[in-house]
Length: 261
Image 1 (cartoon, rainbow, N blue to C red):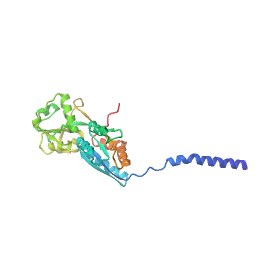
Image 2: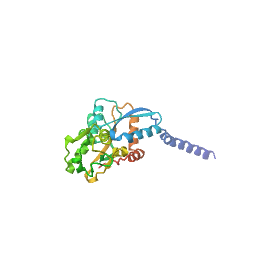
Image 3: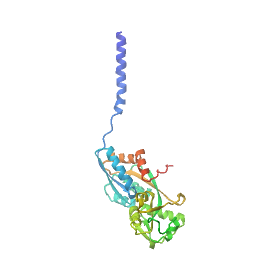
Image 4: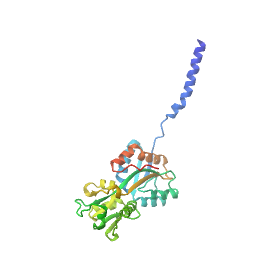
């Protein structure tokens, strides 16, 4: 009996020692706190604002501040030393500038995509039906050539064989300004992202562009190397790319990022 009791005691001790590391592995992760600034493409305004509110509710004690503008402008700001913890671009070219400059050291992740669309005044008084009609629409609102939505539009016109008269175009500093020119009546038509046309509601009318004539905009995201709160910056990137974040983006009209090859 004494030998049996001794053996049982030994088994209990071994079992306790063996399970201790597993219990330690289940320890809670450090709680997120503090604040970060997310520099994001203007077309992400509505979606990211909603996501920021949701994220802060989940992670009490955190503050997400947004800086929305054209991706080209944001890249220049970050290169110039402007404070930023995360960059979400509407194209890969502006993200690559920061990768090359060492401002972004983590591998950027494509998290969403978008399509171009035509917006016109309610009722479509100019009778616009296609991309070709934009050549003679009157005043056309486009993003500036250096802005992603402007580059995508130029790419679309080239591939579709449509020539636009520069003297009859007004150029917006970002997609929101381009959209506003149409909704405020300063332009007869414009080319913006599907998500922006959706956010405008009934202030504009959307004329869809067939996929075969359209251009896909791909959005990458990455934390900034100089972030003073890398834990929160990484958490935001993970949230955006998570199923919850992707669901919100879809609700605002964004498409999934194309699969990587």
